Length: 151
Image 1 (cartoon, rainbow, N blue to C red):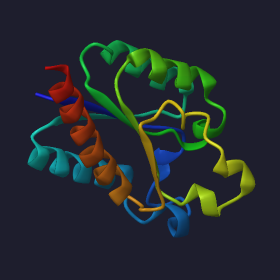
Image 2 (tube, rainbow, N blue to C red; image 1 turned 60 degrees about the vertical axis):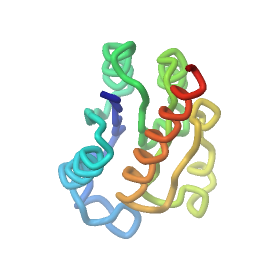
Image 3 (cartoon, rainbow, N blue to C red; image 1 turned 60 degrees about the horizontal axis):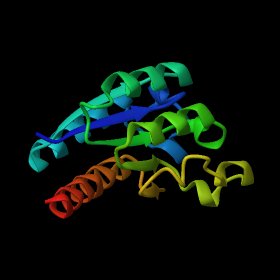
Image 4 (cartoon, rainbow, N blue to C red; image 1 turned 30 degrees about the vertical axis):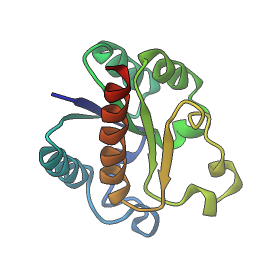
């Protein structure tokens, strides 16, 4: 079965109470439930992990490398400076889709640059929690296409 790791970066544990205008009113548990529901319909397995610490995200990713087929990541502020996380994503050797709840391209200038962007197959921004399910769907398709080309 296809396995997708969903990584949530700093401050995403405060979803539901952190600036609902930009991040919505759902909690992280609500978002993870919706991810799991969509994964079930796609017949894939997901594991969600959140940390406010870059090293913990890297440790989680490295521990699962070789077991996972892809990564959906919302790196939060690490998007803009998480070079160690970028290296770990590259080293994982699996396709990555970057997600942002808000449209980072319509916000402050410093939010518009992602150091992870060239590591990712694509980026989804501004769709709220739906960005995660869209990323999951895209990633499942990318993995299936890669598998078909390998045979």
